[in-house]
Image: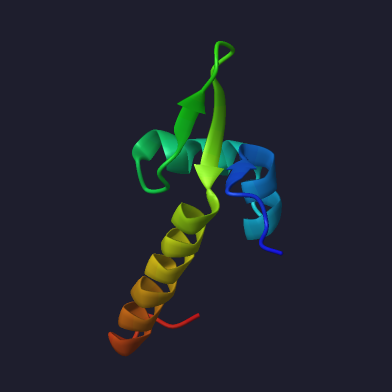
Length: 71
């Protein structure tokens, strides 16, 4: 069975092992697409968007390493 379609920002922070404020900044900047739902305005990130973001970060990292910008 697949996981949930939408994740809370806390779930995203846990998955990426970063702070909640970092996830909020990613959503605010548009780097990680999020959606505001319901009357209370809770934010969610679609699991597919999180996966796409992770893949973009892998691509950027590979390109950066190719240019000699290693860890």
